[in-house]
Image (cartoon, rainbow, N blue to C red):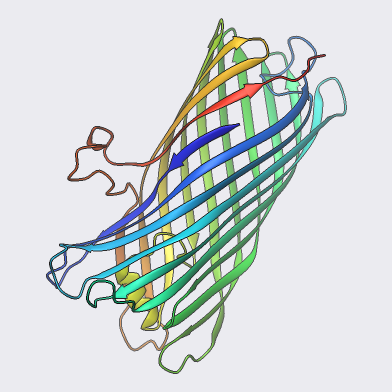
Length: 361
């Protein structure tokens, strides 16, 4: 079981007005619990994964949304605040089919829903509109894992179901569709060291439906979606302590925006613009696990995420020229406050977990 605090932040610069910055963030606070049963492979085979395993994990979090434009004293700035929730569930089953091989199946669902109150440039506490946001990603994977002394190779096919929506009084954006792809993984272990390399990709088309003021004419079309990720990690184990360091490069192209929406985006969506979000993020993870006895351990973890995003806005009527917004996904949390300046103000996840073994065979 574990508890963690996380931030997802987006910020962009504004030009052509007295307003200079547009900042939005989401802050979930997770409680997670997992159950697992596992049997190791024969001695000397593989690089750390069980030959047989079942696993179920659930992570739930209330979240808070906050968006503002700066400087605060300029009239006409857009602000929003709201609450939401995250629901994450993951399951895995791995079955040994021979001395060297296992087959494995995984299912993962990530869901977010939030409701924001938006002030469209009015006086304090003057509600301009209400916004409903939701997004969901369901992944299914089926794969094969081969073990040799100190080495593992794994391949899997993947299916992902994506959905995202953004609804206000002035616009409704909804996208849904399926992506197909695969993942390859290699693990090597020698002595106290373990190295892992993994890459995955998924591509497909999403069905997009949009409406916007004043006529709310329906627009239906297909849009490309692309997800890619690469991970390199190294672990060191000695005595009762395990340390795990990893780097992940995550890239995506999606035809919707449903997290940490900026004020400038709100106005453009209500005005009939369609978004395409091209995101590049770099995540750095540190996990330290300390075993106090064979049946109990404590785990501390920290993730720092830096990235950028380009949102291309296209006019549905093709009259106005397209716009591009350069967005910093490293977050403005802590800027001007000094709290996270030493880390470069990243998006953060940090928490603590406890592990207990109920039986051993």
